[in-house]
Length: 119
Picture (tube, rainbow, N blue to C red):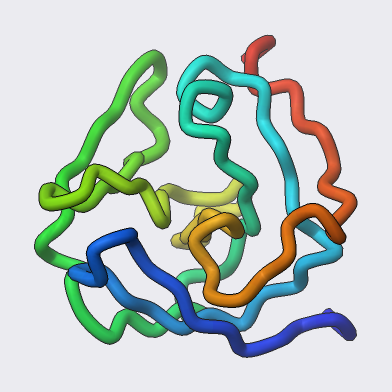
């Protein structure tokens, strides 16, 4: 976690805001159906590394397929700035959509591909 930075982010309208300790060198791009349509780039974090400033309980939840991940989105603007789930070890995990972090140049990142389509 040498490249971890405390960054802020949220949805488009500002109803959801959070701060997270993110290692941008570990960003992933998933090819599953929802990630492809969202254009999401994810950083998976232990839940303790994310602090919600507002809107955590105002979001709506969307699940599909195995229903293991909770794809959260703002009911006002529709942006999915984070998702919730459990890691393989059972630990509560939050996936922050890197594209929803403030002042990040995503074109400078080299995200790792993840084959979610095959799951």
